[in-house]
Image 1 (tube, rainbow, N blue to C red):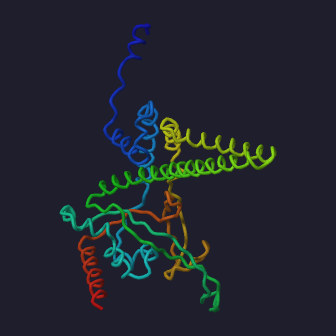
Image 2 (image 1 turned 90 degrees about the vertical axis):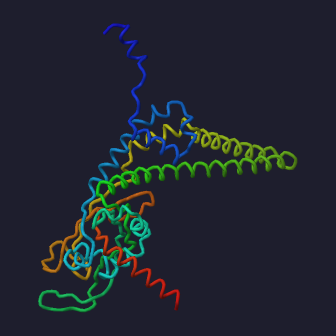
Image 3 (image 1 turned 90 degrees about the horizontal axis):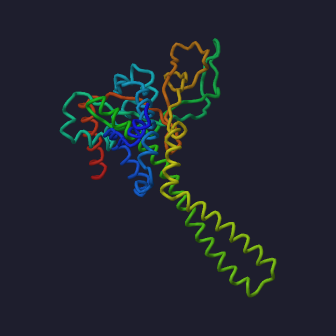
Length: 329
């Protein structure tokens, strides 16, 4: 290749960004800090990491199991759905109280299909109790047992189209990553403000020491002020747009720690009592599901669900009627 062609290639304008990537970059600046766009090389440094994070979010959503039907019939026949709710009526309560479901059903698009899809999430809980258990041919009382149950059942991103739900979940996954980084930035800002206050107090303290104390106390105070000044400068520098861009790029290149799925396998009977893997109880079933770790660090079972629109409408009306009766009483 000639020198002339090499120079020509170097001077060629960069190809335009993919619209979805540009939209994601705008979202990054909006959620983390609008001043990021003022940093030199904002697009150059973040395009690759954001593209990687988007791909990671795509893979994460694609690996969600389901969709599984969640209804009264599934509660009776599907061991996993049976474990997710204490009673079949709790399914109706979840649907009727869900603001996401209410908002979705109020939209004309909710009539496009007799079913809609959403991500179902719930928190796994366990408690210890003493109960009855058969050991061989003997039934014993006060046997220590571990009981599995779930709480906080919720539906996220309801849509008549499964692809639309998945798209919404990919956007939420990226936002979760950005929320986590934004929390880091907020912590740095709080630290900076705290250091500024400490420096101000220490300077006032030194002013008093100069007139009333000996050299040793003044030396200790001066050294402490210098340490605070150094910490303040370091924290202030880390909040400069160019430094934040590089920190964010490194973070988005390794999103696994902040957002990931962990497979879980647990064997329980119809009462939710956890069994040993070698248990031959015909009423015991092994449940397999992933748990999502996101920005609040709490684990949530996560999977795709399919819901009957008519059943959801009935549930919303039922809960609305219950609430109305309660207000009358």
